[in-house]
Amino acid sequence: MAKKDKYAGSGMKKQKFSVVVKRIWKMASPYWTKSEEKWASIGLLVVSLLMMILSTMVTRRMVIWNKDWMNAFNNRDAQLWMQQIGVFLIVGVAMVFSGTFNTYITSWIQVRWKRWMTSYYMDLWLSNNTHYKMQVTGSETDNPDQRISEDIIQFITYTWTYTFSFVQNLLTMGTYLVMLWDLSATIPLIIGGVDISFPGYFIVIAIVYAAITTLISHIFGKQLSRLNYNQQMYDANFRYSLVRIRECSEQIALLNGEEVEHARAMSIFGDSVLNTFRTMNRTLKHGMVTTTLAYADAMMFTFLLGPAYFFHGAMDGYGTFMQVATAFQNVVNSFKWFYTNYTGLAIYIAVIDRLYAFNEIYERTEAIVNESKLKRTENDKGEIEVKDLDVYLPTGHLQISAKDLVITQGEKILIKGRSGAGKTTLFRVLAGIWPYADGNISLPADKKVIVLPQKPYFPIGTLIEAVSYPMPAGTYTREEIRQALVDVGMPQLVDRLDEVAHWNMILSGGEQQRLGIARAMLYDPDFLFFDEATASLDEKSEAELYSMILERMKKTTLISIGHRSSLQQYHSRVIMAEHAAKPGSFEFVETAAEASYT
Image (cartoon, rainbow, N blue to C red):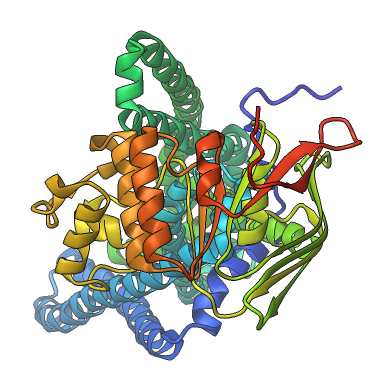
């Protein structure tokens, strides 16, 4: 029985080379085949390739120059020496231009690619409520924010670097293979005083040597991809735990939970530290092997060329010796490209695996949503019609049912029931963010809808941005915003419209709910859903706000979830979530408006 890999991460799997290439293509190709920037970037890509070819030609010419330069000194040839000074100036200018200009072009392309790909993945994550549906379907990837903010950048950087490094490697290989083939025909391979050379023998030796060293490197470094994958995950988990502490600092402080949070955070950090030591140990072993092989590289061509040069005079000077050595070393390095870049490629494969997992989870979520049996249609009557609706938990357990509900425009409806009866889930189904349902829902076409939860969300920014959300700042005038704040009982904020703050952190629960109602009044929706949106307010404040809403938003359909019996006076209909025949499930049944919930 094979020994289990103790370094294997839960999300990292071994992949064939062909699979890795397909994944790279799937993630990289949209920019180069579908984006509006593709032709401009392809043009820059052509320029970059031309600079790469020029650089290869110049490098090859520099090897020849180096031979002539050394031979000039070796033979005290002043004329050759003077000639090579001029050649050096020309080749040097070409080398500087091709190298630096290509660096500028490649940086330009990468910035354009990063900008587009980040926007593309942000759209995948945020469009159609996918970020929420990933959680609902139980398929959310770990730390999706990191995959967008970090993995995309690393993917592009590594893809560009290794793709063009490989192309450059092929160009270099082709250039020096020709040179080495020609040199193999003129320089003997003498071992033990016997010439055992054959056509292209230098090339064969380079291939065999590169294959052996690459295999050795792979044996000692194959764990690095998994270790790097795990390291990214552990570090992201630790950062997220710190963010949670910051976001929930008040609750932690009130409960004196700092000691527990410290221990929890350090436990998560401990995973990162342990994995770092594993990576260090594996890198140490791999580094010792690769360093040893590097020393072997330095002596390889010396052992091959030494006898012919020192004992048989097979070369016309030290310059020729260095030309052969340089050509041979470049061919060996070309064949050892995977070995030379092994550590970086291990990190690259981990990045590919993490970013591709985001794609897979997005597609899995979309498949679950598309398989939903819920039929959503639109009507021109301004009504919400629910027929034969069954809503399930992700586990498949039936949670709620609604056989025949009709909500006409302008009605005020209160939904009541015990906690966990599925009242909020009904809102999610109506909002189109809960896929586990079967039945028919008909919604009004082209109507403005807003849902106010018990704990509203406010983006970090100015108060204007917080109140205007989900509309952009500037949608409402400053006077309209000031008046809305006064109307909901928060005049103390009217002079803080331009203040940037984390409003969810500095406002109390009741103040946040007042701000949420101000947002709804500014939005002026056709349908307003209150999911216990006044639960943190005292009954007097709640009564004042409900009375104001009823007075100012008479045409707005108001659907409230609440437990207080005092809410019934503001609603014309009451729908109760009652126990259904199936254990653990509930059914929405209309009751008399004056009924009370106990």
